Amino acid sequence: MTHAIVCDGLTKRFGAVSALNGLDLTIAYGELFGFLGPNGAGKTTTIKLLTGLLRPSSGTATVCGYPIALRSKEALRSIGYVPDNPYLYEKLTGREFLSFVGDLYSLPLGGRAARIDGILERLGLEEKRDELIQSYSRGMRQKIALAAAMLHQPSVVFLDEPTVGLDPKSARMMKDVLREMCSDGAAVFVSTHILDVAERMCDRFGIVNMGKLITTGTMADLRILTSSGAANLEDIFLQLTEVGPGISQPLGDSTD
Ligand SMILES: Nc1ncnc2c1ncn2[C@@H]1O[C@H](COP(=O)(O)OP(=O)(O)O)[C@@H](O)[C@H]1O
Ligand SMILES: [Mg+2]
Image 1: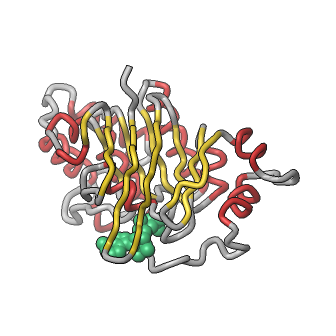
Image 2 (image 1 turned 135 degrees about the vertical axis):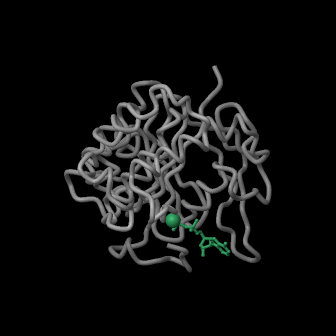
């Protein structure tokens, strides 16, 4: 069976800045993977490389068995992507927007409306579905962007800092939806710098700092790696990245 995601020496430089440096990473179907790192670590760059939005300076990435840099139609159809700042059509209602996304993916019309309504309901957006997106809160925008990314039932979904702006109930709802997608066999790749969310949401973690993957593992694996006393992901993260208490401080220029 092919893996959902395989990165082999994936590297991206922007001039003198090494945004991502030799990433080797394999992610299986069914996995909910948390990609963690401080601002400027290279998370967004990695996701853009894995969705074919950026070309690597060197190395390769395969997603669902497709070399993603080629951006084949098949490859793009098999992935879903929730950017950190989703581009939405303000003058469409939630339902209209999702129907438009359905057009982009040539989703069959039969059953489309029911699927859209089902997803809107699952994400707690049913009351807002006929209102213009311009009236949506940041959290609702995150949710409608997720709805758009999952509409075509992708096999791999990327979410860039998805829980920023979500209240606890919405974050829980999103976690449950992502978990269901994994149970149905999809791989989910979530980047975040908010550690308690990741700790509750993900099966396995990768910790990235200054463009380098420091380590990967489950919570149990990571605990073994760090010295005794690392009780939670935050302690582990701080030990492994050695950035001190100000983890939300940018290490370099960030595009966030
Ligand atoms: N388009 C770009 N041009 C130049 N530098 C960039 C660009 N995109 C990202 N970078 C740099 O690459 C590094 C990693 O950025 P990014 O992947 O956005 O980090 P993260 O998402 O982890 O906060 C940062 O130093 C950032 O300034
Ligand atoms: Mg980012």
